[in-house]
Image (cartoon, rainbow, N blue to C red; front, top):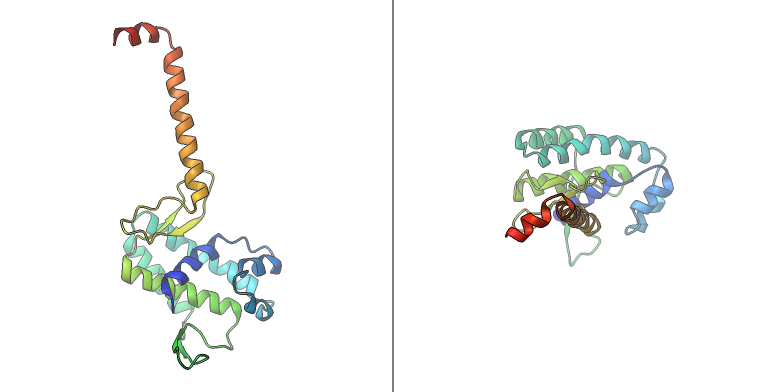
Length: 188
């Protein structure tokens, strides 16, 4: 069981716009074998879980360790996880978070909770965040060695850096155009 990947999938689940079954299939694009198992109630269950899980990322983002832990514990109590040893490859026994009879929603919820619970125990409760790019509200998992991640994606990081660069250029241009700026610059 790759708990870091499960934790990252939990962020992707919170960020997913699950408007209909096609959107759920798109969210599961890298796991096409799950498409045929999507049931009618999965979409509603996952939307409800998204709303339950987002506060965990928000609490972590403001370094509220107690709230992260209590929120995850509450979610684990409401959504029990039943890990099982998988023997589909007898030479590579490994853990799965639910049995094969579970719904897609139960599988995704179990993966998210086990991934986040393990990540919090292994790396700390402040490794979850909300993108700092002002036009984005996506969440992310920070597995960087120095806990320095601030954006959900390279795209948001680039947008923020470009915006900051342009703001500095505007301030410099305004300073050059202010009355007395030439005399002040000449005096330096």
